[in-house]
Length: 290
Ligand code: NAD
Image (cartoon, rainbow, N blue to C red; front, side, top):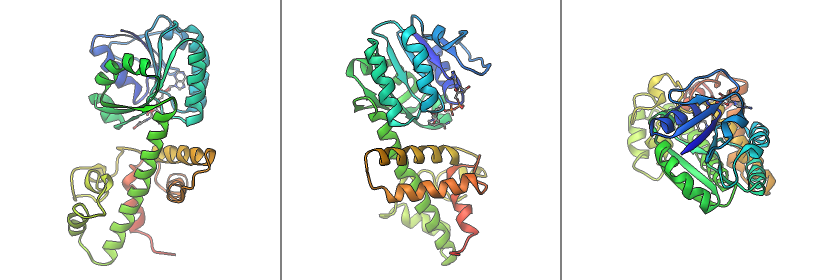
């Protein structure tokens, strides 16, 4: 397939490299001066998009996506697929999809989970909104870049699934960390805490697969000095998107709002920036109620 790939950062570069390695003809563009193995670089986003059957975007936010979309939609061939894999607000995803469809394109919003490690290994999970025709064309690419793609319904539903998932993740990570810090103060060994909770009703992905306590449970960023992993500022971004969406549809999300406020404090006023989002545990360890 002839593929355009715009946004070759931490996630986009390894995803584009995997598509090229699988034999696809990939033309890339990034504002920054980057090179990616197997990917031919174009002089502009429109040049990368011209003649492509699928154009993938992997960009920082909804405003940038809107700007790039305005540039590439007129350059794309009718019937081509606009495949946005960025994490953006549901409103931007739906607006960009409507513009693409009005220009005779298929549009998919397909944010990912799995992080930089999953992008490099080709094991991402894609949560996909958009039409069935586009999904069936892109399926082959999802299989190369990831291990699973779930079609969640019409445009915007991929972003909706992603922010709902990450709102649960942010809240459960905080709950897991505060419970560990309480257990410490009650004199309960972390190993015992893990053994009980990971096999009891408090279990979750945060406890069982990504335990925030070093030396306990499977290997996780806690065992590596809380190097991300999934950085606290990326969790904050997703929690903000969840609250923006909740506001737009008048949904009551008190736990999501509390998680967002705590990650904002951690990232913007404390030492959370650049640390894994599970570094909430050392944050709680040092604090009392006051
Ligand atoms: P990044 O900042 O490393 O990459 C973004 C790239 O987009 C950069 O290379 C930047 O130069 C480029 N860019 C910005 N504006 C552009 C423009 N107008 N035209 C062309 N290129 C432009 O970010 P990332 O970590 O690769 O994340 C990309 C997206 O994936 C984000 O939406 C993020 O929320 C999401 N995501 C990231 C992770 C992760 O662990 N890093 C995990 C899941 C989802």
